[in-house]
Length: 428
Image (cartoon, rainbow, N blue to C red; front, side, top):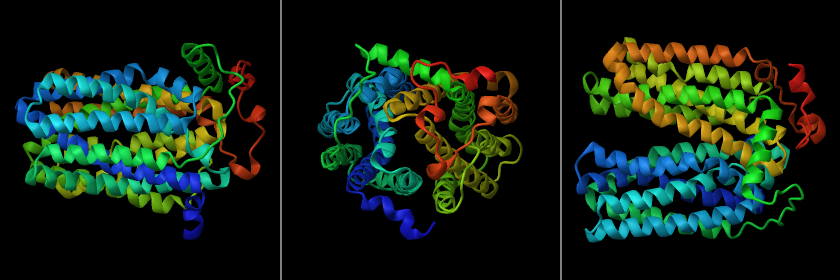
């Protein structure tokens, strides 16, 4: 695939406006995490206060994700995203104002974070259902890779810029910039012109749509098993790397060494998107399961040999595996799932992925006290390998193939019709 072919999605006006909105949105979001954390710590310098604010966003995000997917499939997704960005912009503007004026209290930030998490539960599945609607099958891989490249670059530069703003003018201004990016993103999304897709299969309620979506995911045969594997792996990763990683680094390579090591992940993510342009994925679920094991490389080093440069390499490899894994999943969903079910399937994946993170973060402390920090790291690595082996042992996962745009079967052959039994799944 040539560079010109890789950039071809940008010639599609609707995708171009959607992509610009995503770039602006990600630029702001990549700054907001650091800014909000320091804003909280300036009000109450305690991990408990910061944990409350973070949890206030996580809980509704997980609780409402499945319903959010049904809502995103029920309404025009571009409209849903515009509305979510505007609400997020208003909420973040209120947060920024409270922080800048010095009147912010922890309960204010907890309440506003709850709203943010609720909105994200709707915007996440809506966003992940957009590319197959905006682009032809031949252009979708390039579209996914463009989004992946921009996200990787922004997540390298965003935290750096946020840190500078926090150190010079304060976290409130960084939050104000994030609020502005939501409004700009909504403006770009308002330029996306798509006809309202009829939904003849739409149920009388959002709950009914969710039930149909869950039934369809079970019929496919690979969605639930793959999402369960993701649940276990994300629980392991959030605890062993997100919590124990900095703890180990503090006693060994220091915060500076840890920051350098973790930056290798974003670089690996970006480099992989350049290589993936020329690679065709045929067995996506095999790629995903192997990707889980490869992404566990930092766990092995944290449990054995903590060296800054070795960890940079391990995180680089993990970032590259994450990029391959993400592309494999996106290509699978866009080929095997009909347009009217996209957001619900992505919401199921998102629910399983996000619900696991606080589980890992909570359990890792007691487990470390019982087995030692290094023991937990090595145990997490071993279980990650087990997750791969279990996933590959499931026929519906291991045997799934991508046929590509040219050879793609009819919708009736590609996936079971909504409400019909999946004969292939029964056979396995």
